[in-house]
Length: 309
Image 1 (spheres, rainbow, N blue to C red):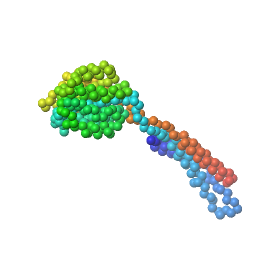
Image 2: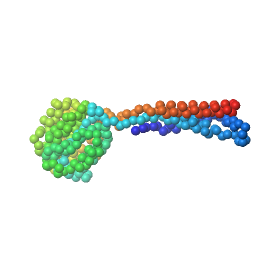
Image 3: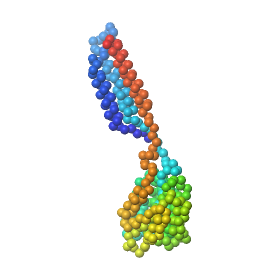
Image 4: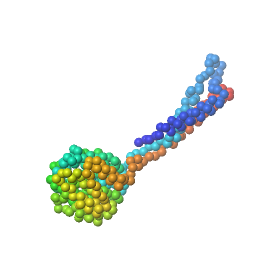
């Protein structure tokens, strides 16, 4: 990838050109070539050919002044950025339509918007109902991750809500992470009614094994108008134990605000522009421009000498 600022090129070229034209006007006039005894009476027009190297040299110097750079995109190193796992409830209750079109689709849309804003972070996906399933490990291939999120639906797993098992699988997906900052975003609209792993014990194990390097942000989904109840007490305890925070998303707009808050709390250490390594390549333009300017001056000097100036 090559980048070049065009405005400096134009401004520098116009400045160089103005200086050159001003110095040319101060001369006594165009040089005339000696044509020998076979003079036809018409002066030889040599102004344009002799100025071409000068104009080309000025343009190359203007390009050099704009500091052209050539670079390549690099992927974050293993220890850079933030590794995240979105842990999504896909139990039947997520089909409730208190969110438009339903809770699951609203949660998926918010998740897709969230990962679009974190291009330098590895993000993975775990879904859970009566049992958990890791669909995508933390990856920079957000296109593939987005397809997994789109396809996540009800019926893939046996119905139920196993919050503890889902959290345990999400933590396991981060075991190989080498980053110093890891995050689990756990979304639920129900309470633990399946599985054999207690969510609080899983949170305590995460705290013991990972300390402050792994935080769990829990999100309670639902307006409370349905027959399904969300266990905010358990979700709050999970977040508190792991150094995270509970978010109560009572509406679809709240979901967007939740992800925006998590985005600010876990800001990426690698801005998009920081993923490009650039090297200056102005030197060839500078050398070529200087040579052409020198050539133009030599041609003018030889013309003046031939004309007897």
